[in-house]
Length: 374
Image (cartoon, rainbow, N blue to C red; front, side, top):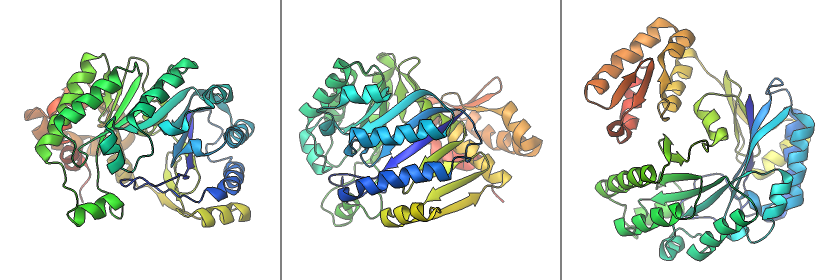
């Protein structure tokens, strides 16, 4: 199996925290869609004929494209690739979902990922989000009214000025909407973003670590009580509603990423497309997208496994580790895991190594300890 990720970099306005490649040059949308279709054709052999089971439109704001443009991209994918789609996800902003939801379903989109971030109007203004809390709630209910039954909501915690009471209200509001999936991320101050610059000038204050940890603890408790499975560090789903596409990343399943700034993985090497709209469009016309290619060594693949598998509740299959990388790396991993097992941060369930709840809070340190060190 395989997946296709489509990066749509267009946004009406830029959020103050966003470090992803995006642009407000909306006049280039037609040229960009044409370039995407050209890249799909030019890289038709990248997946070696593997059936495409997931398609994911991310961004940016994919719903800044028209329904016709989205249909054009999907038609190209179906015409060129061996598509057996189980899941087609569209990232969207609440204020873009006032119409066209029924048509998205007709196009085959069967999962929505709605970027709400918070239901607090004051905090939304701090993040430079265009929607209000009322619009966010209406967007979810509107999607449900036309038949979407696989809806994910994004929330953020540790926002400047956000209190524990604010966060509790956000979690309660999200879970009250009868969604099937919740993604929740601690705010990161990405270098070069307006929010990071505000922080450096002392205009805002970073949430203290104790409060951020308490927010995460609260999230774990509330989602569990609501019947959600905590299947990845930042992701929670009702039974049977995990994100199939994102799960493929954590399981090292090949995927093709098309668009400016998109990343791909074929099982042996990675490719990252240029983060420039003009260079991407020009490259597609010439038949050669500017991109960086990275062949991965055996130890780099091992490190990748540590970083991805341990993020999930399924953990790392040590038998698979041994078969793939040999006894030396298998023993190296176990040797470095022992201290964390003894401290209750990792647990060994049969042949699987998993983070415990305590380990979730120091997961980066644990993964660093297990990664290869020359």
